[in-house]
Length: 304
Image (cartoon, rainbow, N blue to C red):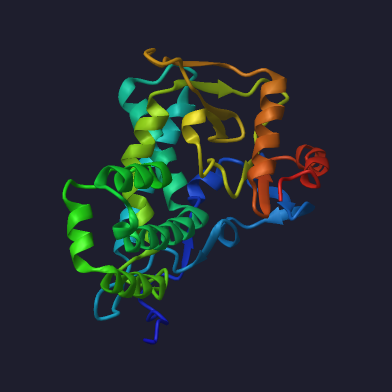
């Protein structure tokens, strides 16, 4: 196994939730407070949360590390920061290009999350297992139908026949090779999940979308899994700051989703905050101690 410790020139601490986003949940003093594993924290540093070492570091076939993905994400985050600033400048309904950019950014957040990347790597191995069994299917139609049901993707015509011609032993040898790959292996990097961004963005954009301004006396919080990692087409909400949230709701078949902006009710803010706690892995941040402490009661009821 190669020595995978990246040199000092490669960026180590990499955020899967951008720091500019975290900063929008600070209180009037500029300080973030929050919950860590259900325990209130008087101060939380944005550099120390929602990040991990070398998440987006990739390797070439010679095992040379690169910041290519991390640098590209940095450019996108710079553009997203400008978008967030524009959305908070006033309470008007954004133009279509800003809606599109916002949907794409939220799709990226779902695809770049460490849990999504880990799951994508596992799914790649599960696909290898199905391919190894290709010759056991009675027909190409049955094989393609099973792949579609399990993975939601279509395979090119003729693939089933070419797999059968390889033979069972060769297919299982290839599957075993895939199963031995690490998430950082260039043959099956975990970062492949980023290729799904546009598909996810299209799914979000097809829904009924609203921006929800928090009423006076209310504020949103943000967890370390801000966007759902599955079933986004079923609708979701996510705070963009302590004062503004995004909400997507599915529309009936054949209908076109709308775009709008309105004031949220206090109950809507409370529900969105509860959802952030429910999805959080270990951290939820916000601007106010009383608000965060009011959410501790929901930590014990989080799904396992």
